Amino acid sequence: MDITTSPILMATLATIFTWLVTLLGASLVFFFKKINKTVLDCMLSIASGVMIAASFWSLILPSIEMAENLGMNKVCITSIGFITGGLLILLLDRIFTKKNKEISNKKKRCFMLISSITLHNIPEGMAVGVAFGSIIYHLDGATISSAIGLALGIGIQNFPEGLAVSVPLRREGMSRRKAFFYGQLSGFVEVISGILGAILVLKIRLILPFLLAFAAGAMIYVVAKELIPECQTNEKKGLITMFTLIGFVIMMVLDVLLG
Image 1 (cartoon, rainbow, N blue to C red):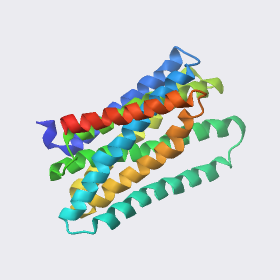
Image 2 (cartoon, rainbow, N blue to C red; image 1 turned 30 degrees about the vertical axis):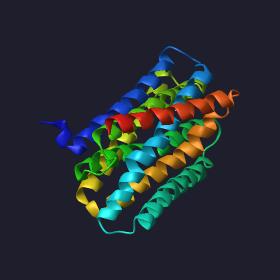
Image 3 (cartoon, helix red, strand yellow; image 1 turned 90 degrees about the vertical axis):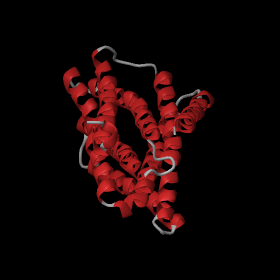
Image 4 (cartoon, rainbow, N blue to C red; image 1 turned 180 degrees about the vertical axis):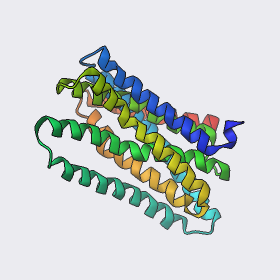
């Protein structure tokens, strides 16, 4: 079977890839206790740029075109979807924060670490699923290459995320095996949310413009709240910022040349 004819299969394979990259990052807990912060920040910065660009070309632009083709108000649908995506992640973030207050000491720190990474992997997986699911509608920007580029960008930033979970858990006294398990598990949610996103797009065509913008809003929220602030804790702020621009250009070039 040609996998390009099955958006759900492509979304599954793509999110399995992003999960495997998380697993690879988490596996470094078996070899290192500490990784150079600047290296990790550069990787996160590049991924931030890639994801910002992918949100625009792979999600927002197709959302606008799809809404127009369906006779919808493209400005309202895309704007509402985008804001709703961010609001949902904000709500989930607050729920998790409230839950964390009920846990103390070492368990609290471990729970916060695992839950925060897992939480923001949900919109990333959904974004990949929506990107692949929308391919069948032949929208401008909704191409296999742009969807692959989005998955690649998310995969890049999943590597340091897996490490960012497993190494601190190890420092808290957890065994290497358990630290690795929870590190890779934080990325597995992307597979589930990716499949869900693709199914929703295929089953309910009218909701596609909203879902595309929704996934973009959720992902931009994560980038703005989690990834960029984390990168900017590095003393080499200017250098780190340049890597965000490089990541943006990489995704832009991929989309222009391969789209």
